[in-house]
Length: 99
Image (cartoon, one colour):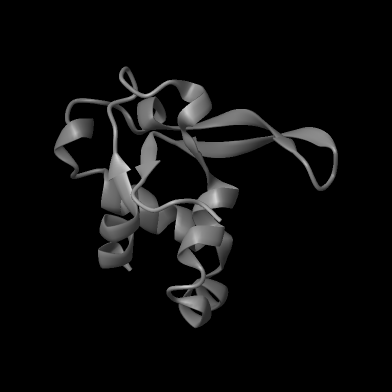
């Protein structure tokens, strides 16, 4: 799974990536799921978040930072539900265009 993360995402220092460009957990999940659908489904959304955190922790760009500096709960507008919700966001950039 970590190889998929490395192919899809680039960790960015939270001071250099504007928060409106942080990757939401919903987007992250939808981007990873096609590459490992059975594994993502079996492990569930919460476990995927933990795997992303494990992959991010040793990244040099996050050295000396607390997890809460690059993985935090923020508000996101849910177009489908037409309301704002709080969701985990990561200081990651996409390496591939989003669908």
